[in-house]
Amino acid sequence: MKNVVAIISGILFGLGLAMSEMINPTVVIAFLDVAGDWNPALMFVMLGALLVTTIGFALSLRRKSPLCASKFYLPINTAIDKPLIIGASLFGIGWGMAGYCPGPAIAGLAYGQQETIYFVIAMLLGLKGAQFFLDKVK
Amino acid sequence: MESLISYLPAFLGGMLIGLSALLLFIGLGRIAGISGIVGKILQPLESDNQANEKLWRVLFILGLVVGAAIYHFFDPFTLPFRQPPSAWFMIISGLLVGIGTYIGSGCTSGHGVCGIGRFSIRSLSATIIFMLTAGITVFVIKHVLA
Image 1 (cartoon, rainbow over the protein chains, first blue to last red):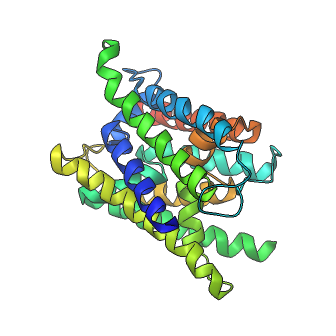
Image 2: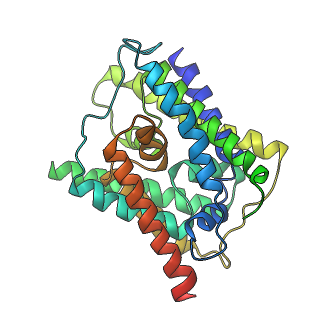
Image 3: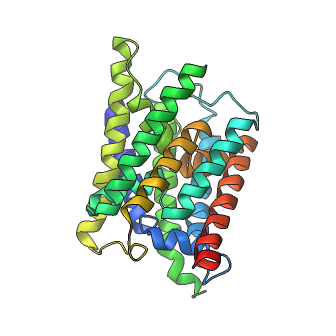
């Protein structure tokens, strides 16, 4: 059941990214380009998503546990620490360069374009490299 | 800016993303953060009972591609990239996104959609920071360097 829920959730996410055109890097860059021909699409995507999650998460947490698992896995760290600031900053630079964040990049593989494949391979290498070095430090 | 109605697909697509995140949360108790889910897939298994914890993640990521493919099937178009698209440009930005999301524990989905969705100040801060540096990056590329 758990696996069925996961795949349906993934499909919904991919459909949402494609329908909202977040899968198109130029639409994302046009949102970030406040000084240019600004396209507010991403703002409407966030509004639509947050409308569902704010209400839905609050209602979900009224339950003791989720439907197919023993507990809710909530992040424990609430600090606005150095790693958060440095990591978010670096991520933002990469996001602004290509107009791709992890979700749209992976979903974009469905469109089979070379640029997307380069980006995703580099992203996986970056993730794995960061894991390798940071987990060693810890 | 165009008329409000032209942003309906963006709003509805956003609701689908929210619904996906809600389903994963009420079903598995998990945060639909793409960088986090991919990161866990890349990490080696520490014990056998973790195999199941890896399977749902792989299926979720597969679903992500399948969902986009289904949409693409009914509404085919090619993605316009920055011209001329440079392989090195995509590789450097991909590396930054991979490293940054691991150090900063999340991306647009985990911090933006899910974190803000549960009113986390840490996630709201991360979202403001990455939107800011992304905006500055776009400004520099499009209006300073160009």
